[in-house]
Image 1: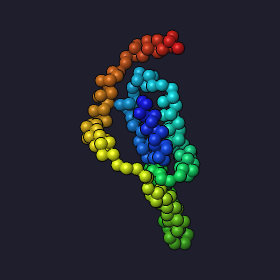
Image 2: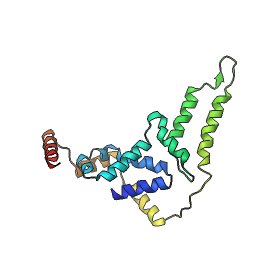
Image 3: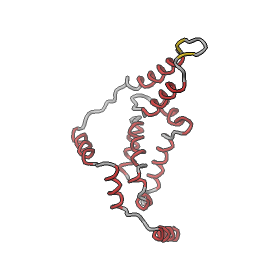
Image 4: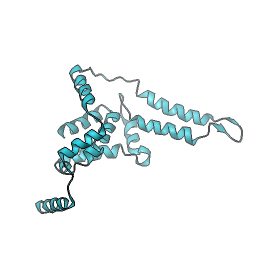
Amino acid sequence: MVAFANGEQKCRSLNNFSTLTSIISALATAPIHRLTRTWQQVNGKTKDILESMRKLMASTKNFAEYRDFLHKANPPCIPFLGVYLTDLTFIEDGIPSIIKKTNLINFAKHAKTAEVISDIQQYQNAPYPLQPVPELQDYILSNMRTAGDVHEMYELSLAVEPREREDEKIARSVALMSYS
C-alpha cells in the first residue's frame, strides 16, 4: 500500500486525474473491495489518502470538488474525461437542437458544447516534461496481458481471502473489539 500512497501523490503532483480515477475504481472492484481482513491491515494514513482521493473525485454536486480543484491546477494536466463526456451527454440530450417556437438552430446549445470542448483542449496545450522509461512500459504491458478478466481476479481474491462463515465474522469482530 506504500506504492499506492506514492502513486496517489505522484498523480496529484502531475495533475493526472485520469489515473487517479483509475486507481480509485480499481480499488473499488469486487475482487479488491471484498478483502475485508486485508483492508483492516492497511494503515490509517493510507486509508485517509484513499478517502481524500474518493472525496476529490466524488460525483456529488456534479463533481464540484474535482471541478474546483481542476480549475485551480496549473497545466500540464490530464483531466478525467468522464466528467466532460457526462457534460456533453447532458447538453446533447437535455437541450433541444432546434428552438420550437422559431424553428431556428439553438446556437446556445452549440456554444455550450464548444465551451466543454475548449475546456478539454486547454489541457492538451501544455506537454509534460517526462521521458519514456522502456523498462517500466514493458513491465506494465506485460502485467496487463497476464492480468486476466474480472472473474479470474475474483477467483484469485477468494484464494487470497476465502469467504467467511457468519460465525467466523462474529468471532473476528469480537476479537477485534477486545483487541482495541
